[in-house]
Each structure stands twice: as C-alpha cells, then as structure tokens.
Image (tube, rainbow, N blue to C red; front, top):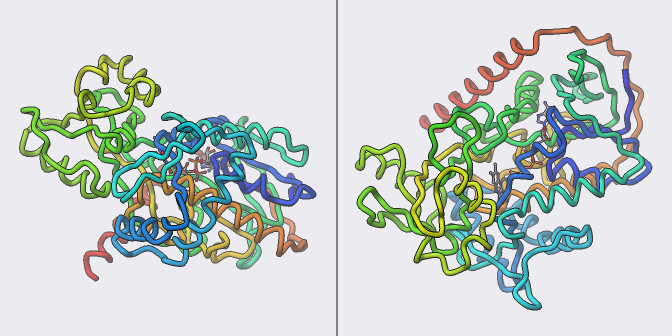
Length: 427
Ligand SMILES: Cc1cc2nc3c(=O)[nH]c(=O)nc-3n(C[C@H](O)[C@H](O)[C@H](O)COP(=O)(O)OP(=O)(O)OC[C@H]3O[C@@H](n4cnc5c(N)ncnc54)[C@H](O)[C@@H]3O)c2cc1C
C-alpha cells in the first residue's frame, strides 16, 4: 500500500492544472493509464475561448446557452466566463504562446460563436497547453507521476473516499490511500466505434461512480463532431477542427453544392451532414477549403494539412471527405462549482465531471477553458478545506481479470446511457 495526500487521476489539462494549483506542502501522486502525452488535451486543435473584452460577457453567455439548448447551469457558465481571463493569464505566465496579430491576440471564430473570441496556437493549441503544464509539473518535487497505472476502483469508508485501487504496469493491483482523490479521467470516446478520442478513454471514473452510487448527471448528453476525416482505416478518427469552417471552409454534397450553414451549432451541422449523406447515398460529404479560407491554409492549419497530405489529400487544392464522429461527453460525475462530487474527499474535474456548464451541447472551444477554470477552483477548495483523517485498514485488493472488468464496465455505462435516453424521451 502507498500513501499520498492527494491522488490525481489523469495527466490532461484538468489533472495537471489541479496539481499546479495545490499548495506545495502536499505529497501528490498523478496517475495515467497510458503515457503522459496520450490525453485528449494534447489533441485539441482549434483553441480556447476567453471573454474577449468587457462587452463580451453577455454574448459569450448567450452563445454558450444557445449551443447548450438553454439546459446549461447559468451560474457555472457565468463563473467560467468571469474566470476566463485569469486562467489565460496563468497559461501565459506558464509560457503558453498564443498566436498574435501584431501587438494584440489573434482571435478566431468557430461555429455558433457570434464573434471571434478563441485564442489558439496555430492548430496545436492543446499540445502547447498540455505540454507547458506537464513541463511545470515535472519540475515539482512534491509530485510523483506514474504512467501505465490504471485506477480500477476507489477505497471507501462510508461515504468518504480514502484513495484508489490501481493496476500497475506489471499487472498487479495495489491500494493507494489518500486524503483527497481527484478524477480527471477525460471522456468516453473509447466506448464508441468511431470517435476522435484516444481509445483508452473509456469512462472508467464514471463506471466507478455508478458502482458506488456517486451522483452522475446528463449521462446521455454525448456530442458528435460534424467533421472528422473519412477513411476506411480502423482506430481514432482524425478531427478536422471547427476553426477550419470558422475561417470560411464550406460543406459540399456529391455534386459540389453547399447544403447548409457551416457555422450553426455542432449538433445541427451533424444532423444536416447525416441527412445529406443519406440523400447522396454516400458514406461522407466533403469539406472545401480552397477559395473559401482566407488565411494561408498550410500555415494556419499545419497539423491538419500534414495529416491529410499523408492520407492522400492536399487541403490547399482539393475538397476532403468528412464524416461525423463521437467527440465529447457533456454529462459525467455531478459536481458543484468547486469540483466536489456527492462523495466526501472525492473531486472530479474536466470532461469526466459535469457541473452543467455545457448543457445539452458544448460550444466549440469551451472545453479546455472549463477544464482549467474548474480544476483550479477544485484545487483551491482542497487547499482551503484541508483535513487529515485516519483511514481504516484496507485489505489487499483482489487480482481480477482486466479484460472481464473492462467489458463489464463498458456494458454498464452503455446501459446507463440508454436509460438516460429513454428517460429523456418520456419527459
Ligand atoms: C481531437 C480533439 C480535438 C479537440 N479540440 C478542442 C479544442 O480545440 N478546444 C477545446 O476547448 N476542446 C477541444 N477538445 C476537447 C478537449 O480536448 C477535452 O475535453 C479536454 O482536453 C479534456 O481534458 P481532461 O483533462 O478532462 O481529459 P484528458 O485530456 O482526456 O485526459 C484524461 C487523462 O485521464 C487518464 N485516465 C483515464 N482513465 C484512467 C484510469 N482509469 N486510470 C488512470 N488514468 C486514467 C488518461 O490516461 C489521461 O491521462 C478536443 C478533443 C479532441 C478529442
């Protein structure tokens, strides 16, 4: 058995930003089931929203609510917008270099935003932010990072979380006791056949929450992204960022005609694409940048340009085939505005958490922002309410078959999602 003050599960932006905002006297473990950089945070292309100026509060709020079908928690949205400048300032101090137009930031626009308010580092925003946070966390002497270490369950004493059970790189199970545990385990894309997420992101924290009766919320609110590159290959779907449409790219049918307004919310554009695929009897529609995107395409979208080129498409001169793919999970483990779950000493942050900020459908580029704002608030809540309590003695964990558990958990989450869908239909 190992003992820590705080165990953080996940090395994406929410896990690392929690660690960076905790007091330095804490002995912290950060765990990831994969390698350090295999997080969805590293994949984020488009950017991160910020309240662009004092007049932008109301319109940022309205855009977020409209995209979320007005099912958002307004208080959470207000907190996110008000703290957006502060966390962007934190990132800049940590060394993140956002693209600039001369002396001012270069703001881009994505679907359903009424004005440009998205900061970006070309189309590698996530890797720049997650990479900078990682560099800082690796310098912290009070942090132990463990790769290939999968959390399979939690240790509990009544309604208090006392740590986690992990499967280490050698396949053995071990107890890690902690005074506070933070789930920052990302999305659920690994449960779907076609997703833009890393396949190891299978909603493990959600499965643990369901098993322990920890409150979950909006479990059937799953976002499908309208544009991933169509290929016949298996594996992670490659995202074509919304910023590409924000910069002018158009969607065309099999005859080369535009068939919808590309800057409507994601769920609306996705529906239009499926309808068009059906009409065209094709497994994809096409996205055309040439002649529509004003910026220098290869320079503004280097990651997308290179990836498509490798797969036989030159985005500067020809349309590319695209198809929708599962992308984001708006639901999750229910939290308050400080990341607290319904179980004592257990916090959740980032995509696995749900405080209702996104409502039924996330507005583009609100996820990195939400992850950073609410993980910082969780860390501050932990600092301000620090308490050391004795733990009971936990028996050594049973050595169980990993494959069997993964399948069981997957089925459990899927049936919860279906139950959520049925409930929604009935109301
Ligand atoms: C292709 C793509 C592009 C995107 N573009 C944007 C964008 O431009 N702007 C934006 O705002 N959002 C974007 N998003 C969404 C955004 O990147 C994610 O929602 C956000 O980064 C989630 O961060 P996170 O810290 O919650 O989780 P992640 O960054 O996914 O990290 C999850 C971590 O949890 C670990 N983990 C999971 N389960 C376990 C377990 N059982 N035990 C141990 N460790 C575990 C993983 O190994 C990983 O380290 C994009 C997402 C994708 C997939």
